[in-house]
Image (cartoon, rainbow over all chains, first blue to last red; front, side, top):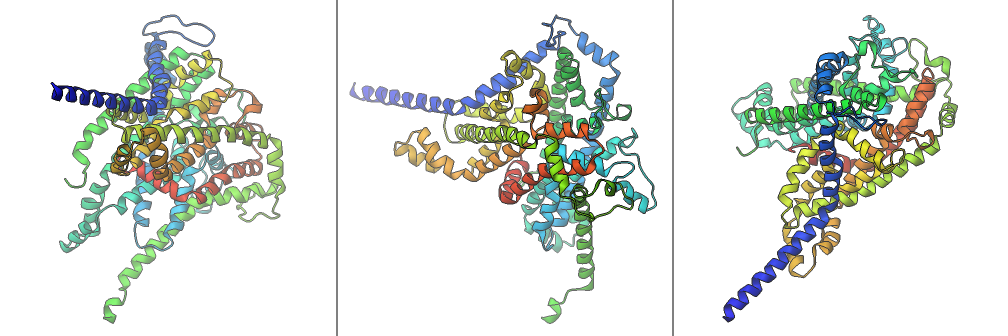
Length: 315
Length: 282
């Protein structure tokens, strides 16, 4: 009797303790929970609903079924243009950024002197506000007076109409993007520092050359980092906006333009234009959902494929 | 012994090649900034000279005065500071609280919230852009700074993740001991957690500040009156009116960029640690 009494009292005490813990945990998580429900989950569901309506600020929004989606895929030529341009800038741009960042990180991961100075030089462009770096690059790429064309002329190559020729606008944007690869470079540099030296020493004893060491030690050790950079890089590529907005509009155009032959029309900019320029918010929400699906699919595919090429230490 | 210390010619060649390549590349990376500075100090006529002039002659400091008075630079700076500093404080408080509950409190939500935090990190801003705008509009808050500030007080996923990664390295035993001593989680957060993760919180503060200082899309959506503009919107408006005055545009950009570079030199450690903490293994 007495023993049973003690155990129930004990378990009651435990229960109270558990409840208290849960309340404390909840209290500390409240900001995030509110933010997630209010500014992420509910809007995502709402946008699914809006995407089937002709919602705009001026009118309430009538149910239109799949009309917005059908319009995007069959009638809207600018939409497919925006998708192709975005895939171009995302994949080619990301490849250029990752390769450049890796090369610089490898160069700095040596016994080079003044490493902090070099590291700072390569890193700084990546933290500059995009608006400012876009203006600087507009000036560098200026077809008549730009520094880049002056240099190309001096080398006898001749001028390139970077921002006026539809074939060159995206390479120009990618060039500007690789200038900002410094944050990825820092991450690679840190990951390179984590590769155990013993691996390289063992490989040297086995007579491995530097190419072979890179291929069989450096790359596999970096693969978790590359995976993470790949996913975040693709997601941010899908959001490519400010650079294109500034560069294709600066100059005081009355109407919003997307560069020569719409070559700087990207998904985010197009969506912004549909939603806030033409107030077709239902249509813009359909675009948002398609983007959501695309981002989810791409992330899932990369994560799934990563099993075959990502190596975690200790395996 | 002496022979072992002698550096082989092959090694010297390799070193020379390394330095040549690195110096060449770093010149490419630094030239845009030097060119920006150089253009910002030129007289209008010298801006368009071929071959390009590197050192302006004469040096025209007046460009800065002109660029800063042609737009309401001071007003825009104050607006930008209001937003950036509020967001900074909000993110530092809210993200550290959430990170604390995800690492040091045993409760049922711990294992539910973290995967969602990871998932929302991968969610492009555009997905919720329109409906969130509609929400703020229905509340009558578009055209104010609230839609730009409030989200920072609600624990952004990326910074929660960053602080969580850092908090994982703080030994649990410290908190267990405090529990035995009768300190509740609230007290533990203030007296143990905050002092120990202070470096990471500083990182979050610096990143949030700079992110908002540089943000263009947010202000573009929510701010409509010219007197409420942030620096990014002000600079963009300036470009639209003075698109051929490259010397003035570069001067205005310099003034916008210099604070960022100064912050970098003061908070170098936070930058490097912050991005490596979140960027390596995810």
